[in-house]
Image 1: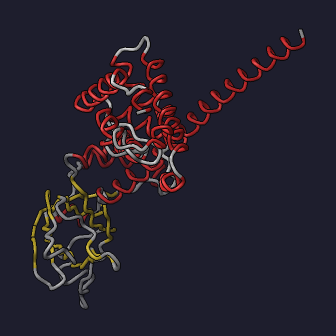
Image 2 (image 1 turned 180 degrees about the horizontal axis):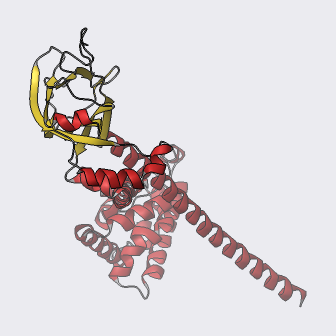
Image 3 (image 1 turned 180 degrees about the vertical axis):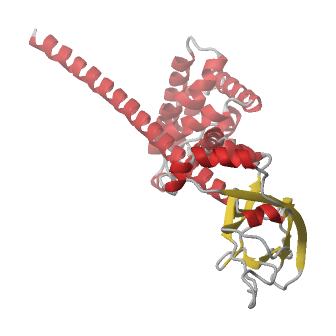
Length: 399
């Protein structure tokens, strides 16, 4: 009874140890899988963010316009047209406009609703795009004026918004927006450096003015700018697929491989391939009596092992036996044969590196899917099966 109880406990302990090892392997695989996903996700975010800031130009750029003019010495007012030069380059990067991108160039003028501006009517805005060498790249002229408001509408608006105007929240002014270029494109060989703005009137009154350049996005840039979340999802997904393919191919490449020539014929641990039965039969006649006696036990053990292995198995099962499963048996037979050899031959045989059966099993399972190599395995196994009947008897070795 104690022995039965002890054996039962030992079996349960071994089963529990096997189960713990299985769960440890599963947990390790899950941790590796999750860690790989996390690393690929953050790498994909980094790649998409880098691509976004590299590919997407700045959508809107604004510069203030400071007009210069000559004042009149005899009467109040200005005696020349207001002009201004705006530098549109960056001291470090140079030109800030992306090549191949179309832009809208707009001038905003903040004008009060004064009687002078109302009497002014239309006036002309002239804009010149110049390079660093002073060459005029593009030129445009547009007209502008205050929007008309009738005296009655002005009276009603002033009465309603009087409290806001008293506190400075609202003012009697208008923002006049003039579009000079609808689709301006940067010349990569002669980039834009300065913008010259001139108002062709001496009677204009204004608070401030600014130059705005807006990027006109189309295609992928339009999708990335107007739908950032959808674009980020698609971009990160594409990066994840690419990184997953790289990881899978890397794992498949570096998981272990062996020459395809070893698939057709199994080898001994010393790297020597198995020889056919005809070569064994031809070599028997050349053996000395001492060598015949040393090989008698070896041939008997090989024949008996082959007969036991082939019982109840067909040729297709034998392929797996001699290709993968019985590789240890072949190694054992080779080691027994090597023990019977002289000291010099055993020393030469021991100098070879022992091949790992697990790595060989993986290599055979990978390459056995090819039809041509399966045919070679079938032919070789049939050859081995036939060698059982052709194996020399002990009487032949006694001659």
